[in-house]
Length: 369
Image (tube, rainbow, N blue to C red; front, side, top):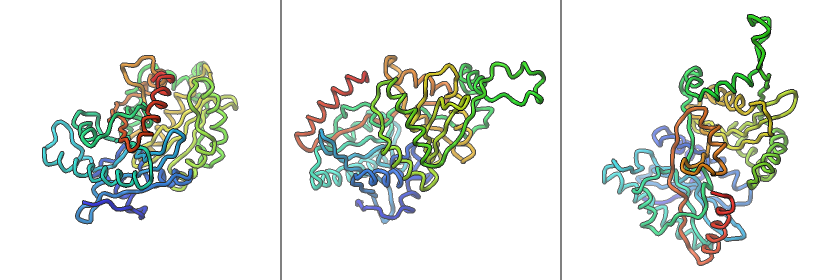
C-alpha cells in the first residue's frame, strides 16, 4: 500500500464517482473543487491510496494559510470504498483493512505537514459517527476540532429517484401548501372558474448558468448576512467557485421572482448523482418563494438524473436555539432523512495549534453553536 499523487482527472473522477465507492454525498473531493481551491492560491494535493496498482482510496488535501495558523485540510474525505468503512457489524479483517488505509494516509500527511511547516492537520471525514470510527482517529493522536460544522456533519438528504408525486406526498403538509400557494396559476381559461386562481402568488422560477447570476445572488446574499449575522462569502470566492464548477456544467444559480423582484435564490451544485443546496439567500417576504424554488430545483435534479437531493447542513436535534434551527425546519419539511458524520478531527503538529484552538473556541461560543 502506498500514496501517489493523481494527475489524471478521468482516473480521479472515475474513482470518486464510482457506484462501488458508494457515490459519497459530497462534492468537496471532486476534481473541480480542487481546481477552485487552486484558483484561490491554495496549494493542493490529490492523493491516491494504491494497492496492487488499484486505487482503494482518495483524498483531496488543501493547504490553508490563515492568520491564526497554517494547516492541511481534507474536506469530507478521504473517499474510501463504502464497503471498507467499518461499522459495529463490520468483520474484523475489513475493519483492519480500513485502519491500514487511514494510517497509511495519516503517516503521509504527517510527513507532508512537517515538510510544509504547517501547525496542524484537519480532517472532516465523511464517515459515520460511531465510537469505532472515532477510535481510529484517536489512536493516531487526533482530537475533536474546536470548530462546529466547518462543513456539514449532519446532512439532510432526500431520495429523488421516486416519482414527483411520491416526493410531494412525502413532504410536510405545510410545505406542500406553501408550494401550491407560491405557484403560478394556470390560465383561467383552463380553470373551472376564475376563483380557482385565487390565493396563488404567481412566483416565477428561473435558472442562470452564467457567472452573471452570481452578481444578482450576491445582492441578496448581503441582505441575508445582515439579517442573520453570519460571516459572508466574498464575491471573488463565489465567482471562482462558479467558474471552476461551471466548466463541467456542475453548478447553476436559481432565482424566485415575484412582480419582477428577486425574493429568493440558491446556488446548486450537481455532482456524482446528487444535487447540493450549497448556498441560499432570501429577502424578508410573506410570499413563500423559497418553498417553490426548492421544489423546482428538486425537479431539475431529477431531470439531470440525480438520485439524491442534498440539503447540506442542518442543526443538531438537541439544540433548539442553534442558529440553523429555522433553516432546519424549512429543509426537513421537504421530507427525507439525515446522515450524521464524525466530528471534524485535528492532529496538532506545532504549539501554535493551541492558539488556533483558542480563537476558534471563542468564535464558536460567540456564534452560539
